[in-house]
Image 1 (spheres, rainbow, N blue to C red):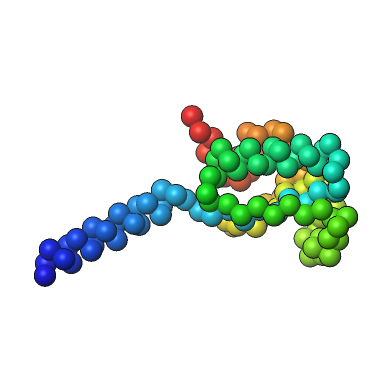
Image 2 (image 1 turned 30 degrees about the vertical axis):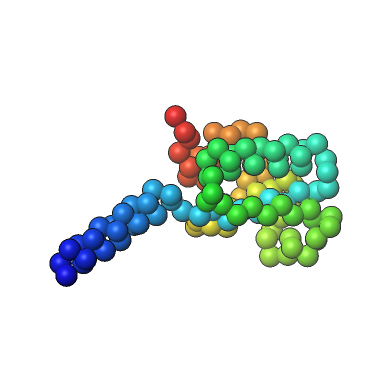
Length: 114
């Protein structure tokens, strides 16, 4: 019986380490205006950041405010493109095409890969 409990506690410890290693889940909303070059750059830059640094740990929603203006209510979106990092807290907003990857990573509290 001790072996079973010992085995199960090792499994739980392993799963906890694995979960901690995977890190936090990011919930991101990118507000854009149509298919402008600036919007396209922001989408491309954000997808690159997510694929390189948040692989499997993010939810991304791209919102075209021309098609879904009601989704901007309560979000205080004044200019686009604007990225809203809802989770993990604290909430953060980034304005622009997200081309300064180091600044975006720093603002999202993500360590760049070496």
